[in-house]
Figure 1 (cartoon, one colour):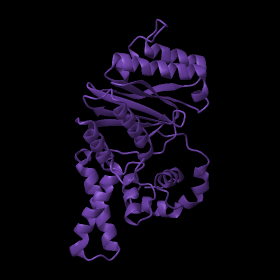
Figure 2: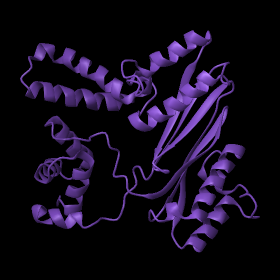
Figure 3: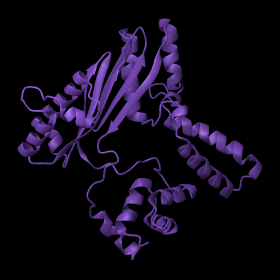
Figure 4: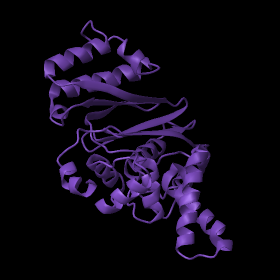
Length: 303
């Protein structure tokens, strides 16, 4: 398979590895991007292997609600100028309110709901905004949490670049300490970017992939075969601490894990508190942007 400049550019963007290393990995993997990422990771050359894709789309992530219920919505547009457009900002805020109030099952169901004050549906209003603003837009995704009893906190970071929701289920959801912890955890999720809530949520194929990479790296470092399984298990515990919210070091107090912080507050209040779910939207996450001039920079390497 021919390795193109854009493929080298994409792999470099995802891993942070050098251009020649990216080209060699793609050649060895016959153009398979995921296999090439694993090759670089096994060689210790990947600096950002957990990236799911290049973050490139523009628009806003917005939130609505607090207390027992809150919603998070991502609306994409072609350029970052639109995010500063007042009409676009009002539209996204209104969409979040519709999600909060109506609890639609999915984006298509959301588009069929009435958009407030216009006589149009959400989908029709989206079309109207596209015509008015003059740029293509898309309601990409949303999340809506309702904790009864409990509390849900939302956090928006970077003027709409990242949005999070955190749900705590407890009979004392209205307590100020519980609300404060939920808000702090929502900020933690924005900063620490967990992928799963607990170990049980990590897919078996993800664990198998990590074990394989860790084993290869241990062997190549000269470790004896009989201790490699113990090394791998130790590294897997570290992996869990990076990707599972409950096992991450709490950003406000890194000496404690998130799980322990929740337990401590529950003990203080004399009630049960469960961290039940979270959502984290990063604007444009996993979406691709038009190739830029960087491809020309590496074109010579792929000839």
